[in-house]
Length: 639
Image (cartoon, rainbow, N blue to C red; front, side, top):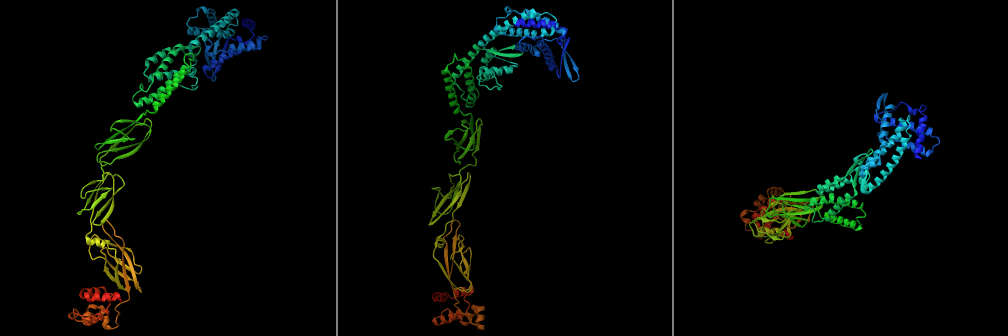
């Protein structure tokens, strides 16, 4: 049927030699570039042929016409056009061919094609396929070129022969491809890189289509990482690259790839913890970057040989992966180094394990705690976070990290305890505490005291202890209320201690409610009641020493009416301005020394006529007439 169809086309073309525009002397195609112009030229020729066939073969089946037209759809790169000229027309480039030159070229190709013979095909399947591909391509070109350029010749016989050859060669080609596919994994693409990716997809169906790394690269990386460069060279030598039409084909023999697969499988099954590097970083990276991938590639290759590898083989691979995961889980690729100086007998505890100074210790990523101790120094305790592949160095100079010390200075023999330990006075004592405060307790002659010392590394503390005498201690501990008497609105002065002690400091803790008091640090004070107040008033005070403070002490003051009314006479007024003179004028000095009862009463009358609120006057009476003054005082208190 095909032969008859072509003969019919040839006859019709011959009968239409003059009338149809297909028989122009030149053909051209114009576009913006030379490449596009060639496509346009080819398209123009094809269009003329197609139109001619459709218009001429009116009795042919429509399906056959479309099929025949499709046969002429050769790409420009496969079209054997010679002596193409390029001309510039306006803004375009036109590709122009002369029919006579094309006729000559087509006759040459036809002569060569008629000599194609299956007996001359090479025995090698791949070379045979490549040769058949070229022959079939050339015959298809002639089916395009003959109608276009040999339309003035009778080529029906030649075309019949070519059709038979094409059919025969196509049959051989198909069988050869089938046979080759049984021996090879192959992929053909327009570039070598695309062919590698496509071959990767053939062998590894789960690979993403846009993956840029081919299986060749994957296997190459594995072999390189395992230092099997010799195996890599052998593998590269087995990759066959052939050109098919305009495609690049990459092929590898199934038998040889099986050998590679078997070697990879054997290598994977030999992996054990003992076979891996002792260096944690190298071991971790080998597992992470190489062995997992080697397992995956091996598994993928094994799937291409279902007759060789069974389910048990894949189960063994699963167990091997689990083993690698367990090894990796306890392999830490980052380390810490301690660089500690400035101390003796240095001990380092890392996560409750003792480690050595200036040595690497591989640690798990996460939080870690370390403690550094040395003789006579405060321990250093700290934490750090370890990140994957991030090494850490801890450098510490222990100079200045000595335990804090204290000296208790005193001329007595007290008992001193600090942090539960008895210490010796006037000697440097080590406090084995390096933060916060240390509390001490001192006991001596019923004088108990306590205090705190701030403890920081390297601190040198001194505590001076000054104890009270018996007299001072008696006053300090005296809890009795001190009673005093005065008159309303009169300034009263007194002292709270018979001793003049530099260790004491008196201070008011509660003011009187009905008067004002001024208490000096030495213990002397002045009191004056509010106007018109009589009755009992009081205030509280405390005694402070350099290291302790007494309990509050009470002072009671009895405030009464004036015991000595003022006499409204000029003489009395004069005596009030100078009370000592008044007494001397009233009673001679030599008689006052030996006063009897009568004389005492007279003395009392004179005294009572004076301003007994005058402090200087009262002090004078107390000094010169102590017995009489005491008697008068008692009488006033008991009244």
